[in-house]
Image (cartoon, rainbow, N blue to C red; front, side, top):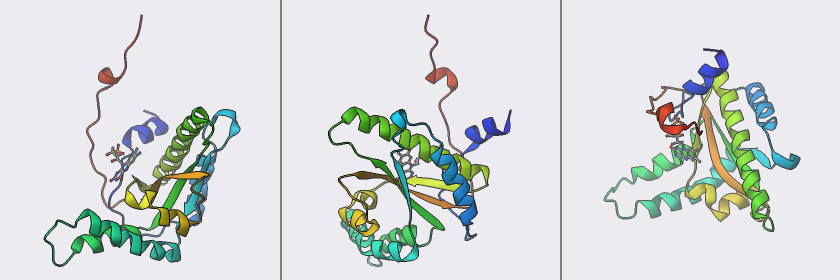
Length: 189
Ligand SMILES: Cc1cc2nc3c(=O)[nH]c(=O)nc-3n(C[C@H](O)[C@H](O)[C@H](O)COP(=O)(O)O)c2cc1C
C-alpha cells in the first residue's frame, strides 16, 4: 500500500499526548494542507485560531462552570472533574479553534461551506499525522459557549466554531473498530 493509503487508513484520534513541543514550522506545513482543501465557489470558509497561554487561561472560569454544571449530581468532594477539565485546556501542547463561515441568508451555501471546512480540518489532521503528530477533534460546552467567542475575538454572527483541535505527539495510539467496506458501499446496477 502507498504511504498515502497507509496514512488514511492508520490515522487515529489521539487522546493522550507527550510533553514534546510542536514546532511552528510543522503547524505551518499542516495549515498549507488545510488551505488547499476543496471549496465550492472559492469561499475558503475556514479560519484557524491557535490558542496561546493567555487565551487558554481566560477560558478556565468557563471551563470550571461547565464542569461543575455537568457533574453537579456527583458526590466527589475533591471535585477532581474540575481539575481534569482544566487540564484538558491548559496541559495540551497545542489547541486550535476551527471555524466555518456562516451565511444566515443562504442555508445551502452555509452547508457547503461547512462541508468544505471539514475537508480542510481533515487535511490539517492528516498532514500532522504524516509528521508523526496526533490530534483530537473536540466539541462540547466550551466550543459553543458565548464567552469562548468573546475571549477568542470571534464574531458569532459571522463564524461558527466547529471544534477545538487538540494536538501533540501521541503517548499511545488507540485501536478502533471500523465498518467493513462491504457494509458501507453498494454498487448500483
Ligand atoms: C465532528 C466530530 C466531533 C468530535 N468530538 C469529539 C469530542 O468531543 N471528544 C472526543 O473525545 N472525540 C471527538 N471526536 C473524535 C471521535 O470520537 C473519533 O473520530 C471517533 O471515535 C473515531 O475514532 P478515529 O478518529 O480514531 O477513527 C469527534 C469527531 C468528529 C468528527
